[in-house]
Length: 334
Length: 288
Image (cartoon, rainbow over all chains, first blue to last red; front, side, top):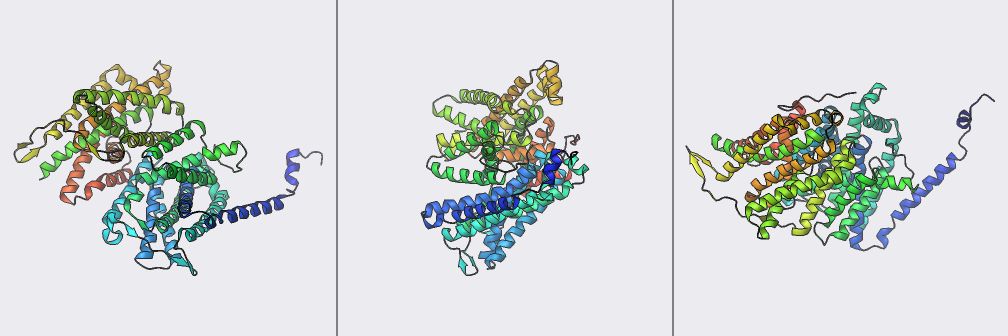
């Protein structure tokens, strides 16, 4: 046994408390979830609406981060996925009178399909070219919402009826909060696991060096197609939640400013960090509410925050927390 | 009708060409795609508006816009872009997005979101030449744009400045090795790009509405012009801009007015999918 190096010894030794640590971790996560389910019992209607909105933007930015932070694709089609999800939800519920669950699945499916479509140019185009073509795609869709007025009522907007499932009715912001919380928790859990899988690692490989990834047998095409479809369906779910929350959607909600908001959330929270996206969504949804009486201040704040992130904390808020050991998350960033 | 449409298309297109030219100058030298260029254009218009409100005469107000934007361009390079030298595309793009937020926020903070307008710059009657009506403002825009473009081509081709630009575009490190101060040159080019945006706003602002979000529309048209002409090609930006204006007007005249808004998006998507190098661009070579 003398010939065995310490490293090998460490590898042989079974991790003693792995099972117990995992159990504690799961218990902790469950406790957090239970705590997060409590606010509707003691906040007022306005705060409740903001909390719902935060959950919508958590969903959206988690989806965007997969393409932007993990797969490293500078694609700006996020507002397009968001709008498609919202319109799919509104049409399925209000026009086709489908059951709620079917509408939700359809919205996610439409978003996934759009993601697949957008991933095709991503196979050929890089960096700015991809950014511009996806930007054009989003604006094209927005034009479509305005002009397909027999279906979408054009600029006037489309009403979204309240809906329910299993006898639960999501007619109030409180009821919707629990629904959104479940959807967001499931998405975060699923995404965290998927990002740790072989597929998730292939995304990071393609982002860091596409040629090297291809050389060791990772297919950049499959990674990109997968990332865009997955991101598209999550963001579209976020859009569906947004439609439910607002009760009325109109084309101008899904333009350039919506896209820039998503972009800022992901960047300020931290590229390539799921928890960063959660934090970014909380900060950038709550702060404008405090500043909404003074025109322009919200945009100035976003600008200043973005500049601060770029100059002083390149990994965003999540990176800063990680530096002080307040956040334990592998960022998989170079 | 076609002649009329083509003519007004060229009028619109020369504005797109100017905006695209400003972005291309910057892109060639610094490889930054400036998502805030529309906001620089907007800022120029609002500087003129502010100066006129203070009783400054029109010519001085225009000069003021040029000086202010040159200073702004320089300040942006020194304060925001230089610390990011060598950063990946995504960070550079994000910094220009931050700049666009700041400019829009500042203008909204001072003037609110209301739509404003400038007094007209000229008041000539439209001229009619063999059935085609020529708007005097359009003519002034076309001529000024052409003059500015001519100046640029001469500068780029024959002056020392143009040789510096070629050297820095070709290889920033090589240029630095032969004694060109590359950061200072980047700074100058930010100033020049901002001045081109100011010139565009001087020509356009008197005929259009002023509001904090007016830059987005111009930005997307300029992207279309650059894509069509070939990213990074100066001649491509100009030809692409003019073509884009004509395409919009023809699509609006012969298909439907709703097409005017999406002609540029369709052009972007079609060009990037079918011929990413555009009309004058060179295909991108990926070095492994």
